[in-house]
Image (tube, rainbow, N blue to C red; front, side):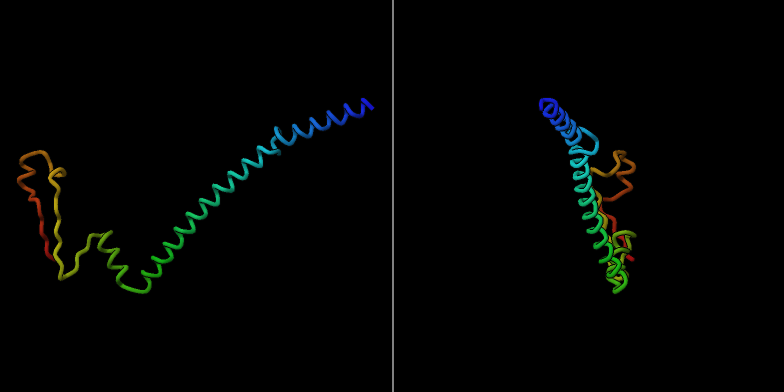
Length: 111
């Protein structure tokens, strides 16, 4: 009977080792759960980005306002009856007096 009890105890220790310490035990489960959570977060971000891009594509296909907005912000285009004003900050101007004399604080260009 003592041999059988000792055998069961050794078997219990072996199973506990496999459960808590081995590569296919609890550590692996925790690692996989962490990886799944990270992937879900990344998938949510990508789904949000896809819906934003789908909305932008729809706007570009349906009307001119989205194209006009893109041209204004990305290409710096100005309409025919509009004036472009560029305000230069004092800190961003060059420190040399010759360059400061050449550039004025406000530049106006009509198109």
